[in-house]
Length: 603
Image 1: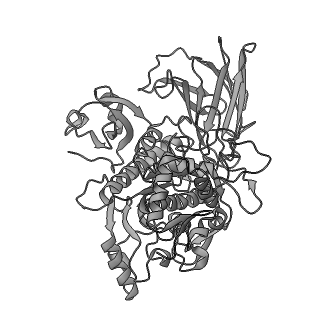
Image 2 (image 1 turned 120 degrees about the vertical axis):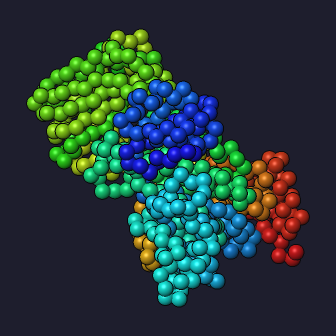
């Protein structure tokens, strides 16, 4: 890579699909650089003022995807999952030994005793801190890598009363990553903090916050919560995937992040990339449904054959100076659009534009009374799914109810939906009137082949309204399963304990349970054919189900996580040739089958 402008604020960054020798085509161009993710995808950095000029000249670029903005999606929840039933069990002892969990989050407090063994050595193989720039020579696009050896040296310094951060300066200032790692695999030095997989090892990626230019694009620069870019998540997953080969270990990747921006059909570049990677044996990606179920950030509707138009309303709070919204019109329809401001000013938008899936084309609506500028960009057909998509970016907004009227001639009913950003990125009072809580799972949770976890209140067995729900657009049933996510006690960065709730919590429990299954299947050689599909099937088949519900459904998926139920179901289905063969192999090593797989104490 001749140049690397990824960390330069004068350059915009894009996830792209390419075909051909893009490195050669970009070369030493002073206005662009490329970082290759794999043979299909790359990150293209282009000087801001040169975008339109250069993008049309790059013949190897097939598709450009504007980056989304991601937020974190964050009860003894571990006990409720029944994972702890297998810790030290004399018949089936599963603690995640031999399995690595990759955590993509806010970092980790590597000095916390829950991640340090009794001999004062670390359970963390590596930390890639994307926020700390250095002159290290490696294949990473940014940040600094800290090895197990360096972490152990830092722990020694701390134990000797010296400063460990002179060796490993990476910290988890926010605390989310430390809390989630504790749920996944806290060692149990404090018995309250024993995670689902207390003997697993970790590789941690501390994500850097996204660029100011992306925050400005979405109007979230003044929002004081962490915001991340899909390209940084994608290269974190790439790094962990390559580590799984290097170490030759089964791995679970935990992704506690979600975004409303993009098509919710599993067809974004991040979705496709993740679904491709989990075809590797012993490699699983876990995410949550997010916290947008009751956020009023999504609407949907149908214009029937006997109707010409329909209207939806967006309430803007008094502090909401700008807004980003996307509308999707299902193929084969396109619509005419009218926008009505709170003062009653009506602007008809001309939809007869030159449509292209690559370049930004559209119109700017100026509202005289409000002083609002609204850029409206039309794409048709979308390269992702063939739909018409309409992107709205408004500045100098005024509070009140904004109305959007869509319609036009149609030979089939017009199916549409619209989304604004996650509620955490909006000011109070900004929401859709008459929202639709369905199809509110955040990206990348709709990716077909990854494990998507909903969350419920494990104390009263009730669904939590915030938990994202699946929809009918994607054929895959989402969520996959549901786990407890309310009031979980876990590790706190800097020591002590903290209480957390949210989709991140439920996904962390499931990630830990996946580590136990990978230990049982691959490390202990009970199921050599343990792919992501295998694990998802085991979890779904063994899930607990509430009596009055119909399964699967878009709220709970196939049911509630129950690891004991998983192994009971495996036992009852020994007709499967592969499972039977491997369980018989286990018998030769001193195991037998009772109500579960049982170790023979006399061997």
